[in-house]
Length: 402
Ligand SMILES: *Cc1c(COP(=O)(O)O)cnc(C)c1O
Image (cartoon, rainbow, N blue to C red; front, side, top):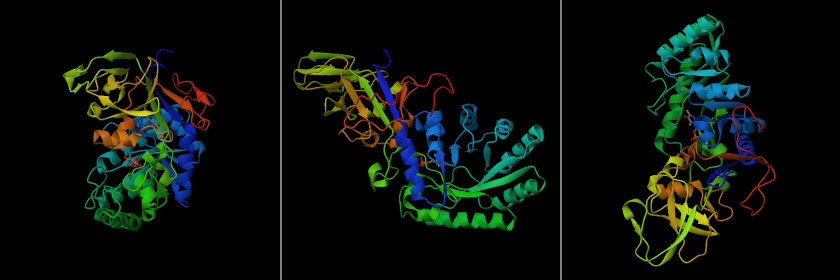
């Protein structure tokens, strides 16, 4: 139990389910692929995947094949797509596990064909077009060749092109001229593939911001990640509640030391903070190894006994300090770093703003040293300490329900 009194990330699986249902309602007619990469944006891939499936997500999406295989190994069935491939695969393992694979170039198509020869099972392939992001995906100049090769392999029974897809560069800036340009380029890529005889099950392009703000990008399937976790991908337009979403993660720690210090006392490495007067310091036992950004030094917000406090001085690897002013405090007092915000506590978005980053980075970087504790029932009103519906941290794989 001592780890439980250091730090804990509570993950509200009921919120994950409600967010998936809200997204489904919003895109009626299109399916939902819940993106579960990076350990479910730090929330725990398997638990999130089960909750998303139970709420009706038709597809799960991961970046690496290893992430997709982890979901299969934990018993998640149904469609899973993974898209970040490097030479060597593991293509054969993914094909055997019934995972849809993404192909952005002819090298990858050759490796898929070789893996099909090895496994004797046809592959399901999503061809990815670079419509302007300039990251992964096939350039328009190379697309006709890729499409022709894929169609030939399909005609030979080696694979089925199940998807045609792309990804936005600036969907989080509605009205950005690249958005219309990418939609046009995607429609052209679809037309080229159609003319070559490819008839995919799903065409998909929308990440969270496009899912929430751009119905023209929904096509057959949307691929929200951040919104599944209840965070707003367009904070300049509205917070989670404005989009019918609820943040799923609450990060807490408990004070590990409380002491009186005199005025003029330096605090933490580099003495970038000096106590302005005689005061009480509280020691929060999490640091950058736990995902608290070092950029939060002197700026990150925490919530203690109903008040906002600011990180005093530098965030260290394992701990940071807050100046509690004249307030009474005790070792073991709760510190909320971020949560949904309903009780007045800071949110992941507040941390992102304080650190000059985005909420994506705040939640995905919570370290492995912080136990995840899962809650399946709606949270108690006004209560910080959950008990009904609370589940123990997932020990090993495949244990517990969703
Ligand atoms: C991460 C990712 C998504 C999800 O993005 P969000 O902005 O979190 O919704 C969708 N598609 C691809 C290709 C991605 O890499």
